[in-house]
Length: 64
Image (tube, rainbow, N blue to C red; front, side, top):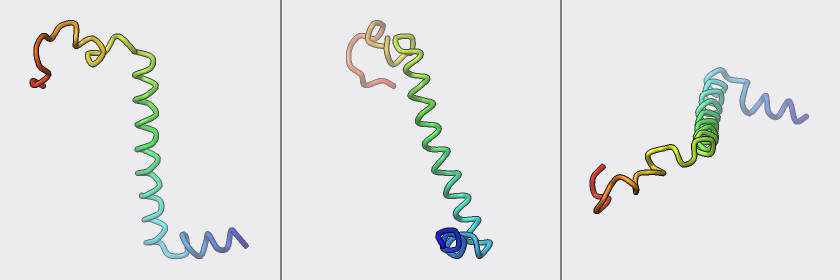
């Protein structure tokens, strides 16, 4: 019953299925990208410019 409801709602028409697939891919990409950025920042903590900038830049943070 649940499978039929999902099929009728999302996969019966090709245009709706394409929309669901593209929206799902977009949401997955955003989530995966954010997760991998957190992993990268965690592994490289203290070695990135955003972590050591205060050692080399004097004055305000206006320039960037």
